[in-house]
Image (cartoon, rainbow, N blue to C red):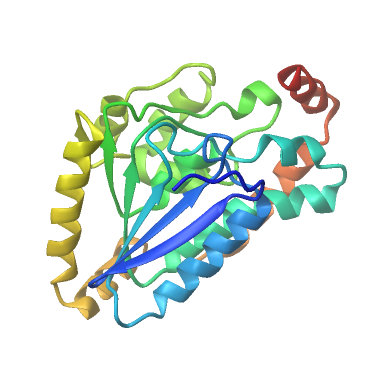
Length: 255
């Protein structure tokens, strides 16, 4: 189900004890501020929904998984407050994923950039296709992946996030991401991916929901400070996006 709505779309389908949350945007499934807010609210609701125990996070279509932040909204940021609010959108989603009482499985079917890598990292388990190469391109436009870094580093470690972020024009393969711990499983194509994902999610959803919830909490131990850390990082990013360097870089990209 495609979307041409400029703020994107968000749909949730419940299948037994599994909630499938699908986001979409015509610009390679990038995120507007409104879509980030809606996803945060949806994850917070699902966290309290006692009829489900697993969440699958996926995006529309068969191409890009997520192109990160909305380019048009990035260009439109004109003051510090707007910048902080915009980048807090990703901070809020990552925190909602982190505190969600349900195990979150990511379905990454294609290329993933910037904030999209952060979303994948905040999932508890990720199924990806061979086409799911990743890139942290923030430095090319004068900002840095400050908000998503804690989530990405928690999964792949400092050495790998250094390699990924300091080569911002280089795509890393899905197998690189798997080797580093970002992806749990990589499949040749989406058909095989979906078959295995469905089987895995149904099986996981049959386990004791209280045990899953208690275990998820343990997996995210020592991250309580992210509530303030990510918002603080959002403010720094908001400041960077207003710099002359970034304004020039964004205008070049726009052309």
